[in-house]
Amino acid sequence: MEAFLSYGFLQRALLAGIFVAIACALLGVFLILRRDAMIGHGLAHVTFAGVALGLFLEIIPLAVALVVAVIAALGIMKLKEKAGVYGDTAIAIFSSVGLALGILLATLAQSFNVDLFSYLFGDILAIESSEVWLSIGLAAIVVFMVILNYHKFMYMTFDFEAAKASGIKVGRLDLLLTLLTAVTIVLGMKVVGILLVSALVVIPAAAGLQLASNFKQAIILSSLIAFVSVLFGLILAFYLDFPASGTIVILSFLLFGLFFIFKRGKRIF
Amino acid sequence: MDSSANDSKTLIDVKDISFSYGPVKVLQDVTFPIQRGDFLAIIGPNGSGKTTLIKIILGLLKPSKGRIRILGKPAEEFEDWRKIGYVPQQATHIDPFFPASAREVVAMEFHASRKIPSLTKREEELCIEKALKQVGMDHFKNWRIGSLSGGQQQRIFIARAIVNEPHILFLDEPTTGVDSETQEHFYDMLDNLNKKEGITIVLITHDTGIVNKHVSQVACLNQQLVYHGTHEEFCRSGAFKEMLAGHHLISHRH
View 1 (cartoon, rainbow over the protein chains, first blue to last red):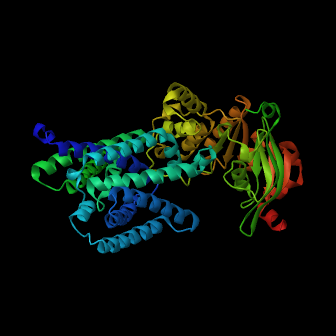
View 2 (tube, rainbow over the protein chains, first blue to last red):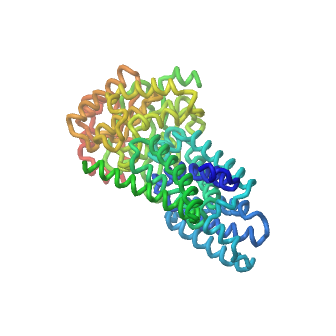
View 3 (tube, chains in turn cyan, yellow):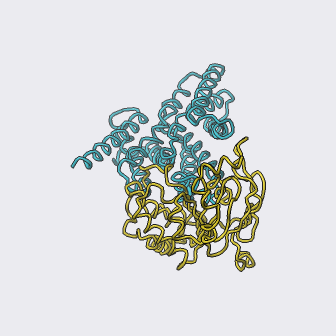
């Protein structure tokens, strides 16, 4: 472990990875319970277009991806609200159009190369100092906003109408949750890549929800699973020379499986 | 808070309210006051606009015509929603697997109108404990909401609605799917909230038998307000008999 931490790049990966994974897991609990688990997957695909656009315009891809993800998240929300399109349909439209745009832009930029692949499959070990601080800062803002609005988000998720009648500005909070999700997806992309980021949102939260008997437990368990997955995922990846992203996601899935079996065991015995 | 509104007897003033879902008229020129201390039952056949009327009062729907004053303020300017408690129609929209304890369900409402959660920890404990006791559910506070029976869940939703000590409590068919013995206890509890705690109660119900025993005022709705007044007068009036043949009533009004 000491040898592990003596590498600066590993310290950075660990720090950014843990912060981002916890932000993903926190939002994941709300998104799953809102039957909105696929929004992470959809936004991640749109993010691909943002990265390709960044590479094409030679502007920092992470920043362009952030803007594109926010616009797409708002677009999905509006398509649902105003055009009466079902949520999953809106997500499917945006994700496939995002991917198509990404392919076109990447071809135009002639950037189907290592750079683009690092965004697709994640490259947390190559994360730069400036990106670490940006990731930690943004993830900390996400976590703070969730804690600040914890009860209101919970109320909206549990009983939207009663929440509205109690004077909660549900429209504003819905927007906030959508924006936080967009930011978190872009950050998660740096940790496990576009293709796996929705796993970071869904799997730790789904695992936490297996065993939680109240909401606080669900939030704490999900965050812990995210933490453990990144910590041990990176250690394993380092010592076994595995890709970090795949290892983190598979580890979180194994924890999900463990919780699932434990829950079934509890029911049987 | 507007002190003149507090002094006045009328808590909510409904004036000329009309509402349509597309071409379908649901409410037409409904006018009535809700006064402090009322135990008011809103009755009427299916599709008579009862739930719509409550949703308009609560600001969940916008009327096509008319205006509402809440505690002396026009509804669109009213912001002190913690003074209004609401128990929606029996929770078909509630996810039975939702991971929230009974206590957390009540806490949601407590925090709905408060900005910073950590400053109110002790007050939170006291208020939640009190609300759960008032509905006789304090022993169930750590139970997951989905693991409680329909009647118990309904009590938790009432605890949620009264945790901020509202002036007025709206309940939309609260006893649907609850057995008759539990219903009786349930109405006794509402009586208690009305008489001892001084909470004004507005109740949508189909159950005219229960209405006889507990309520002080009746509003009979069938797109228009057919009757509004005391319970005794209602029983003597023709509206009651018509009411009992509810489906008949609705065809008359078109």
